[in-house]
Length: 400
Ligand SMILES: NC(=O)c1ccc[n+]([C@@H]2O[C@H](COP(=O)([O-])OP(=O)(O)OC[C@H]3O[C@@H](n4cnc5c(N)ncnc54)[C@H](O)[C@@H]3O)[C@@H](O)[C@H]2O)c1
Image (cartoon, rainbow, N blue to C red):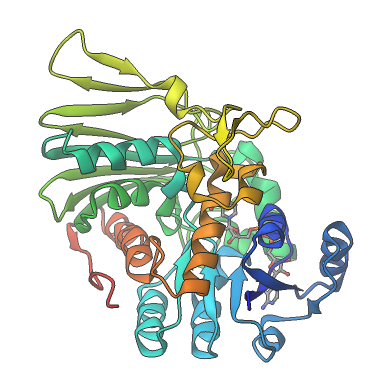
């Protein structure tokens, strides 16, 4: 018997995931769920799926084994807890939650029920992050001393439309949230590479000047009374290194998620933008030793292995994996499917279905997701207090 999964939220982001669930050999049944019946109907017509539900509350009363949350970002925490306590495994789009209590509740619900929780952190499978994780495991950095992580997504890069769609008529109330409440794309790069976690933070905020006429930021203008459109934090990590994280939403720069890592023996420098992983290199103390990594890290068609041993380019339908991505770990159907965010969706969905089917621990489990998310929540508190150094709570390593 395969996994029966309910996809909650038939908005924009879940689209490519529904096709992946459909193509996974260990998925038995998919139920499409949204509060808006039109969206469910439309997605059903596109995918041929005929099982529908009108709300998460209703879905939790059905026989699905797991739910995948693609709802608005500020809803994930309470919805994940509700699903876990109702006996379901949970895949959640980022972020895990937006308050410390929401995250604590999820970790406790996982510990109490033994159900699987996984956060779909796309950065985890980005080619540059995989490269750094491999290098770290080889010991090639020596001791990591300093890491820079950043997520730049300017309002003019489609963000107004996204927040209008997610927030509805009252969209401004949720649009001007603290940038550090969406920290997982950047923070996870460091945490998932080293396994170290962030212990202390001092953060500065840039008070938005509201020149776009929307007046999204400031006291009384959003749910969080937040003034900052950009936040920059300096963290201490449990391995003794320093980590600088920028979360910018008002920035004259191409959109990007990226990390550069500096170690006592080797360093990885990343000058890529969101559209490509070109511009990454590996360096050591030797002036002449600079390895350009474009060929290894760029997502573009190249040869892949099928399980029958054939080494073939799927040239009638090119797939865009980077050479460094572990394509062999995927089911054959996933090797032939393109997806978003540097092909990370394929790996995330396979990881989650495997976890549900074989009861294994996903890499992006509740305890790791907490370590990706809580640092940003505390960083924003520090920014509100003009950079006061604050300690970051930690819920520890996976418990089972
Ligand atoms: N790289 C990434 O990891 C990445 C990229 C984009 C979006 N996301 C995340 O994906 C999520 C979804 O984004 P989107 O742009 O598709 O949002 P969206 O607003 O288009 O869709 C959300 C849908 O959830 C539905 N919904 C909310 N509560 C529900 C409930 N109780 N029961 C059933 N349906 C419910 C809404 O009706 C809506 O249709 C966001 O949280 C965002 O953070 C992550």
